[in-house]
Length: 183
Image (tube, rainbow, N blue to C red; front, side, top):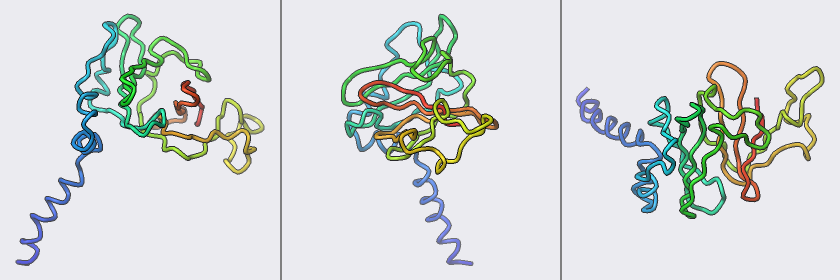
């Protein structure tokens, strides 16, 4: 019992340290990232979406080896949701959706989506806009011809819903943003 009491503070410390999120760790180890995190929205009609204020994604969208910052934003003029992407190496900011369409996505508002995560590079995905099974069934990956699969060369943004089907991935290819319907 005495050994357990001595071990308890160590377990607590390890638990706390392992719970540090990726952004805090990356900010400590990547100097340019602090500048990105402090950067304010550059367009007066765009604000960080209050529902996603604490959520930020760090990923390498453009494949340049530096982390890019993605935040969920809302257009105050049309009240539509989109993404702010701050590119770490290029000192460039892009705003996607929030009233504008994206190739492959008919919606101009991401407000129906509830989750934003990283779609890891080097993964293959079925684009349901291109590959639908007979009777509208979602095909298994092995049933889709190789030329219809989408291979992510860089990280992407996986956008979805908590308890229902519907979602997709925003990714970059040839310096252009694309959408694939993944569920």
